Length: 126
Image (cartoon, rainbow, N blue to C red; front, top):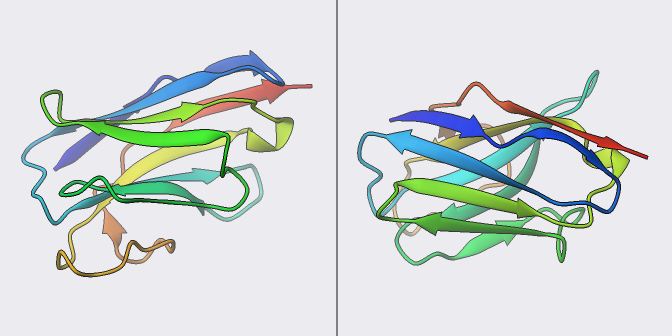
């Protein structure tokens, strides 16, 4: 699966952006698609993920209540709606897939994920 992230840009604090992660290739029902981000000088961190089969989700504590992850089966795309953005949300955002067994819990670490896309830059000004 090849993933293409898009939708990043420059926004003022308090604003919103919607990121897209378009997949070319089949996303099987057991797949989890996750969003991660990496700020300058920091390690890549988990943001949110969604299981393709049942749309179950998981979020990082730092984005709960502000970000919403969703998927569109027809478009083979995962979205990340980001509201009430803060300067600390500034980062390159990446999407990736976890292809483990359907009963595996949604992971919040980098390790089980692959097919990393090229990333899209989100800059939040104060």
